[in-house]
Length: 401
Image (cartoon, rainbow, N blue to C red):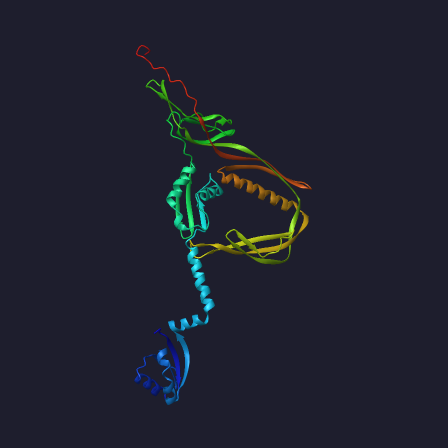
């Protein structure tokens, strides 16, 4: 029999006699607690509860059910809510089915090969959203990707949950060459003054403080091998390697109009719900108006860290605005010009360029704000190019000495 228990409240003058009669008939009583002068609580099995009717009438006590627990009552609840239980079972079956499919592909570390290009390659390999995970062989995919893209030197593929992840490392992999064929020299890409220089391989042709021109050879890939008398006996060719920093000036010019249009928000924000199921997008918002800003926030459904579902929902926040023409004050125009200059400098710094001096002037007239001048920067250079081969020196004989 399926177990089930009820917690009862027993009140009356003969409550102790009621308990004794129950025990006398072999009923199992648990958790007997005295809660008042004429009240106590007791827990018993459901099958015994249906036998206490004659005992209740004999002792004149009042019985009140406080709690019901146990598998029996859960099954009774399921029987009364068949549709709800059927929906829960169906949902669990759907989740179990979705957990056997691929719903997310993540690629990291790729720079030379765009993600869209790699996804097209995976699609040609039969990898697509919604496919069975059992058909995915990570090792074979990694090998195929390395063969297809020579720039990829290392790739790791892993399948966790419903997400297929690729970690990629890229680099130049030139064909094997002899040391002489691989010899190269370093040339300047800019005009300027050598700020500092560290040579690891090759023969430096300039020193710190020298003025160089664009295209000038800075480090030669030729090493002169000399004898005891410092005469060149042969040439060796190497792949020149050095860190060369050139100080030079960069011209800067920027202008913008003082007459601008400013957005003035009006009315309240309107929020709309949208649903995306794989490539199907269900948008419940109205058509976008002319002067309206929209921000879309999407929340993907993720059961666990690696278990993604092909379903996401989100909110579109829309707000109307009007355009108001206004003229920037000299103070605001100068502030904006400085902000634009700082953005330009930030981009240079991200490229590894060091800025040592700023000679930019800001001029403001009735209509425009103009920034012009130069920036003194230090930039790394060194373009590789093949080394021109020299004829090896003629070997000396004893008679020549």
